[in-house]
Image (tube, rainbow, N blue to C red):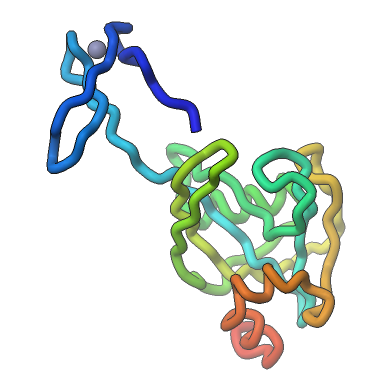
Length: 168
Ligand SMILES: [Zn+2]
């Protein structure tokens, strides 16, 4: 993860200071403090019937890994809007939010550091797949075909999809 060495506001060198119970980088010139906050991400567990739509990531982190469509929530949009926007951008499909699955913390050691991941169950309403250039591939998986790491992450939700509980 990239670190500030100089103040992003005024350009003065940062030094270590003890602020709000923690050692943090602070500016020697202005009142900037380098608080570390997780980046907010919206993620779509996208389903059609009992099939889940996954993308093969085309960019780091986790390039080449099959995962749910996801991306950073931008200023001015809700987490629901971000979720459906990322689904559309990465796969070409449209969907509607069924429910909030939960909020998870993950640490990305490659680039982004701490992430706060808002996870929604999304019903795919238009399944024409047009993956964008951030993904290597996109396709629907039957539940038994899902990679085991994915099944472990979303065990409860996959069990519900199996029973078709959320979509009735
Ligand atoms: Zn400064």
